[in-house]
Image (cartoon, rainbow, N blue to C red; front, side, top):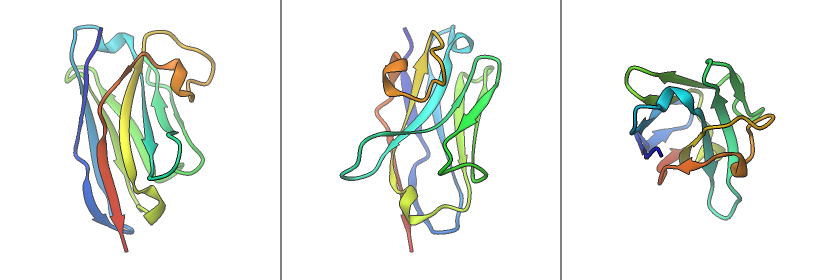
Length: 124
């Protein structure tokens, strides 16, 4: 089992940058595929980016070229570096972990563990 705790959210102006982190407990962090999802007010949660155990990455089209997911196995942490932030990026960002791989790994049901989320607010 793994526990996930996000941090680093906050208020940032449009065009700015922010990095959110997700710290995982447990010794088997390197065995999990990791992802970031987000949920804006009044909307369903959506996939943002994922990174496999081997470091293979996949980003949603809406963040491609602006956001970068990475992981530090020594620190049991996954990051989401967000640049050129837009108003529509405002959401609660949650990390998720999956022990097994199912296809694209872009759907919520594919993940076994979730953090509580961190709020990112982009202002004009």
